[in-house]
Each structure stands twice: as structure tokens, then as C-alpha cells.
Image 1 (cartoon, rainbow, N blue to C red):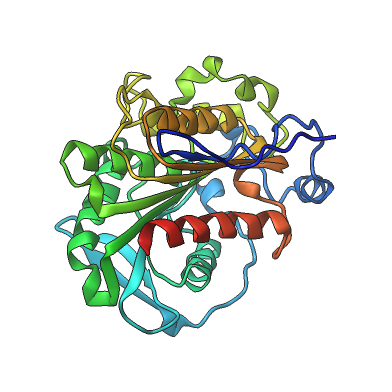
Image 2 (cartoon, rainbow, N blue to C red):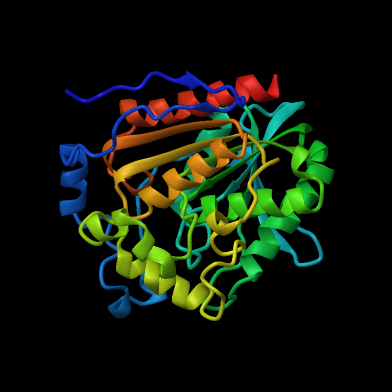
Length: 328
């Protein structure tokens, strides 16, 4: 019988949920079926062109195009998509950084997810289409997401957002960038503008340090995200950077105190599981409020689950609970 750990309130103020021991060894049958379909395949990146990776076609429901604006911001003309399905004002702001291993832009199927986030979290979503590798190596993406955060924090009210209630959400590579933004904001003394981080299966370490994390070896291939792909993306995104640079792997930040509260999600069959869990633990140890859960039987970013799956609903519940507690 799986051990269940109830949420514990620690004396230092952290709220840390290690909801299950993430070592079931049983891949969710629904996910196994999706993997066999080859819909999700990042195997052998050495023989897969960047163009093929960017040409992934995943069908997603349509949404009203009147609910989104496409704008460009800052002196660098960073593309940003602004989702406001409620068409109202004084809404919390979610700044969303997309997945894609630092090598894909916002792909069409991702747009539905931004719209869905705005609906479910009752917020205005600013989705930042940051520059990508190999055309633009580090620190281009970091500069884009950080400059976009500062611009939105100053201008979000023009689009109906409440700049006093900013959440930064990131998945996979986007989770890496969200964590980096929070650390840079703390260095500049503006971390208080970020009320919450929500990180879905974030890559928090440089794949060059994969030997430190057993999950990289346990789930190196066969579960969508592969160790080989992670080594590929870092070779084109940050080939010349020290593996301990915290702007590439935020887990390597020496001091994590004073960072915003964070919801952190990991998945059992995911190479980056252990570094996500370690980042959650280090935040907790530094006195940061953390909501953490690892999902047994699931793969990176909980892909392969059908819409409405209880696991996906649980992620939404966790983020909504955290938003309620820190924003209101």
C-alpha cells in the first residue's frame, strides 16, 4: 500500500506536501498507450532536426480568438500573447513561460493551454515567446523572460491585470526560466513583486550535472523526455557555460532565501524529477513556503493523460489553493 504523507506545516513557515513516495515502478496505462502512439517522441535528437522538433503537431480544442491579443514589448520587441477570456479588469496576472527545451517557440497547441490557464485560474495570462536556441544562445532567453517580467510588472494594468498580484508559471524549460527570474528579481530587490511561482516538472539543473540525479539514469529513455535530448538542448542553448551557473541551473544558486512561495510539481518517470524535488527541498530549507507533489506513474509535465484526468485537476487545485492563500 502506498504511503500517504499528509501536508505538514513546518515551524519555519514552509508548507511542504510530499504527497506520495514517488517510486511506484508502475507507469500509468493511459500514458503507456500515448507513448506507444509516438505522439510524444524526443528520442535520438542527434538525428532529429530542430525543425522537426518544432513541427510537433498536437491537436487541441479551439478557443475564441477574441480572447487573446498579440503584442510586442520592450526595446527588443519580445512577442507576448495576452489572454483575457473574462474580458474584465483587476484580474491576477500570470506570466507564463512555455516548455520546449529552449529550442521551440510557442507552438500552436500551447496557445490553448494559455487560454485554459486564464479560464481556470481566473487571471490574465501573459505568455512570453522568448528567443530560442540554437539561433539565440544563453542569455537571450533569460534576458527576454526577465525583461518581460519587469515590463509586465509596470504595464500589466493597461491590459486589465492587477500588478500587485503577479504569479509566474513555467513548465519544463519554462520552469527553469521562472526560477531564474525569481532569483534575478531577488538580486535586484524586486522579488516581492512575484507573489507565487508555479513550476511544472522544471529543469532546475544543468544536464551536465545529470550524474548527481538518479532519475536521469532510471528514466534515461522511453518516457518522452530523454537524457539524450536534455544533453542535446544544453549543447545548443548554453554550450560554453559553467555547469554550476545558476542562470542555467537555478538549483546551483547558493542562497535561496527570500524567494517567492512556490508550487512545484514533479513526475515519477521523468529524468528531471530529482532536481525538481531537490529544488523544492532547498527552498523549504531556506524558509520559503512550498507546495510540492510528485505524481507516481506519470511522465514529464504529466503528458499523455486525457483531458479532465484527476491528476491534471489536482495540479489546478494546488495552484488555485496557493493563489488563494498568497494573493487574497
